[in-house]
Amino acid sequence: MDDDRISDAIPVLEKGVERYPSVLELSYDLGTCYLKVNQSQKARAVWEKAAALGSQSLPVLGEALEKLRRQDSLSEDHKKEISLCMIVKDEERNLADCLSSVQPFVDEMIIVDTGSEDDTIRIAAEFGARVYQIPWEKDFSRARNASIEKAKGSWILWLDADDRLPASSGEHIRQWVQTDGNESRALGLLVKNSNDGGHTGSVFNQIRLFPNHPTLRFRYPIHEQILPALEEAGIEAYYSDYQLIHTGYANEEAMREKQIRNRELLQHQIETNAHPTPVTYYTLANACFDLGDFTQAIVRYQEAFSLAQERNNNEHIASIVPTKVALCLAQLGRYQEGLDLLRIYFDSSTSVQREKVHPETYLVQAQILEALGNNHSARTSYEQLIDQTEEQTFIPVDTQLLKIKALQFLGHYWNHSGEERLGVDLLHAGLQIKNGVDFNQKDLNRLYGQYLGGSY
Image (cartoon, rainbow, N blue to C red):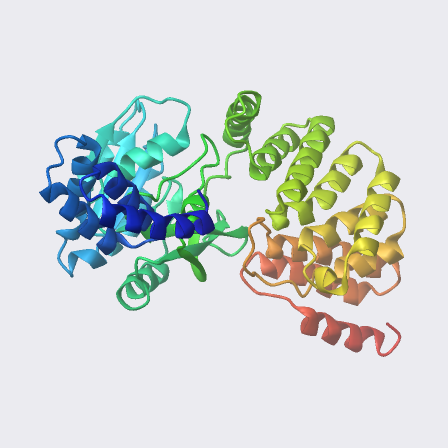
């Protein structure tokens, strides 16, 4: 039931409870609606009054009230406590580094193990985590929700074993909980897929901290999401620039095995009609792409686009699909088709939409133009990448890697154009980015001015 329907139902149920107080089902339904709009105090008041009349005839009401009482029994200090919730399996290589990074900033650590055969459980216990073992049922949401059920703190911070929380981010999170956090807000972190301490790597925003509330649970068996539950409860998502390092993409073979698993689970979700969303089709397309099945990836990207438009949501997916399809066409050697698709995309975009073009779009356009031998136009597209910065986004993007690729092309371009010194400086700038030295549009303009004067 959406927020509008809940709001409409509440006054009707309030009148019903007032007129028929002994009909406990009405009180239970009213309390449930209060919870869905994040009014737990009203929910408890209604259920307490109903329970006084005798809740034995409706056990579900007594159970719900007891759960709410346990939550409300937390002291004011406890209401600021953070529970780390994790799910793991065979993570002995990663877990210690993860827990040591986050331990100073949480009040308890809960780890649900889904069948480890290595030293994962022992390592978790050494860090003082509470470990629970459950069978793996090919459902990430079920496992994550099992960890949440064990949490005592009023805030849930969820991590994976290959995540690392920088100390500065941990301090910011604690401060946010103390000063800005309340039961109507959730916190998004800037997740960076990186294996060099955060110098390079793709970034995207993701909700990682949210109130411990019985209605807030993950959904979907793979690429599980908490955002739908937050939206239904009317909880605001605040996206910060607090960084979280995700190191899970270092091993190509491990990445391939992960995508094979993801493809199987996502296909099963679609085939069984288990609430597939645009994200389901999009992530399945990504898995197909990573596994080299570019033709099937195109099909799945198009399905993601159609469903996003049909439901009028997931705009970030609809906007990136043309780029992804163009990239697939390029991988299949169909460069002109890919370029034509991007031109249609740019021509159909409004000026506002063009200002929000995903950086990867310029990269794909540049690479296709380069493959077609149109280096002059490719240069213009590559130059668009130089001034990109890490910003809030739901689609991962590695701005530093984009700049490195742009500078590599520009360095060779100007070298072949007779500007050897400029080419060398641009290639050097690309190498420096790997060492954490940024390069932006001002730097490019300075080099162009130095070597080309006003001719560029």
